[in-house]
Length: 178
Image 1 (cartoon, helix red, strand yellow):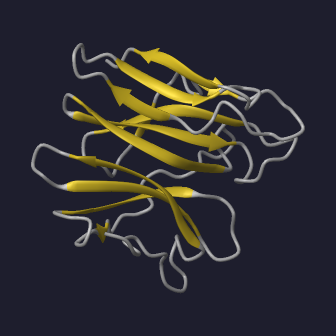
Image 2 (cartoon, one colour; image 1 turned 180 degrees about the vertical axis):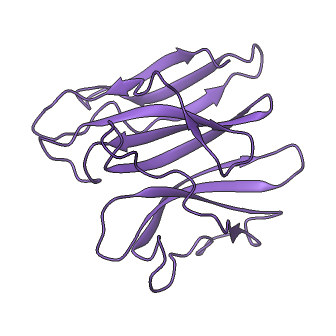
């Protein structure tokens, strides 16, 4: 199957400019949830939305999108994207990328990653210990970003894979999810 499955929004929509970086999960009820980044026309401040359906062909964007937005004045105050979900008990947890500016790589833009959790996929609580990784200020601004969350089947240990602070290496970290 190929083709568009989450199209950017129409004129005036929060995701009018683009949709990108999908991360998906299938919940125990069989519903597929795809988390994606989007931004408005002319804007570069990404937020996260979610679409769901019984198949990739029937995905519908949630009416309350965007569900995770930049937190003014915080490490992720410029953009949030790359949302990667995992189910942990009654919570859905997102490992996500954030930056203090927009999504460009430049010396003053510091990327990082953090975690948020939700019971209803609409209202998200960021972990107080965020960011869990943050790039050093460097000429490129990127690093310690692009998180991907994974649970090993045999022992249920959760890991997050992400780029290193200098962007040259991939890193794996054990994650204790409560």
